[in-house]
Length: 68
Image 1: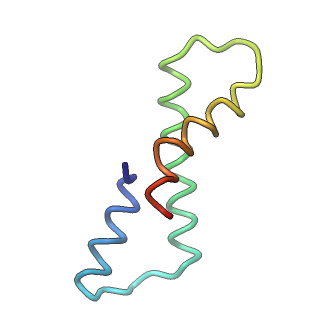
Image 2: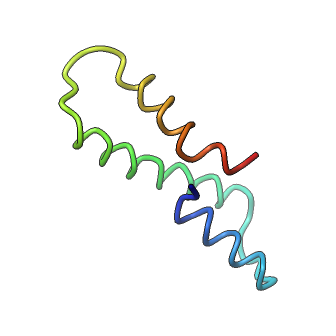
């Protein structure tokens, strides 16, 4: 699954539009990841444990597979 930012980057690339820099792309991906994290946390009753590691595992399984 692609994030919305990754989809947009792909579409701009297909159209030959390059009005962005690698730094902007990474910043946008990190911002979107934070939004996803907030939604992920709201969907769970997490009050203890290493939820950060659990989120990173879930995020990697859902989104990072597409980048390779």
